[in-house]
Figure 1 (cartoon, rainbow, N blue to C red):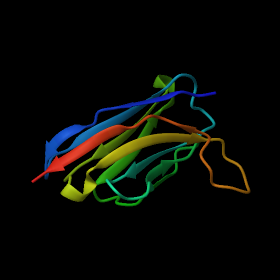
Figure 2: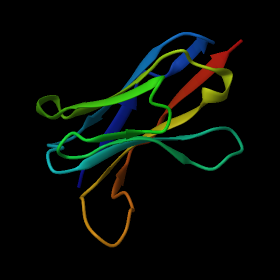
Figure 3: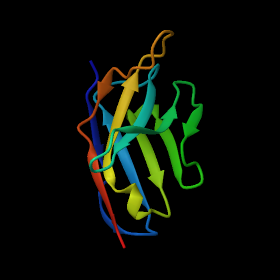
Amino acid sequence: QVTLVESGGGLVQAGASLRLSCVASGRINGYNMAWFRQPPGKERALVAVITDDGETYTVDSDRFTISRDNAAHTVYLQMTSLKIEDTAQYYCAARVPRVGDEDYDFWGQGTHVTVSS
């Protein structure tokens, strides 16, 4: 069992930067880690993934960067040039890499990001 706690959200103006953090209750070695977001009234969607060996996939790689610090049990999402449409609840998630499904095993409670004009 892994407990994930996100932090770093808040209210910012368009164009600003934020760094979200996700601290796990234990080791994250061996887990693929991801950030998802759910805008108001919309479904949750993937933002970025970092595999257990450090490979990354980011939906908007020009503005967002995912990274991990296994020693600190922490995953980060660096967000730059924020837009109003980035307003959402941001969730951290973890999964054991496996074949057959893409489900995430553990989820945090989320941290909210609001971007104003």
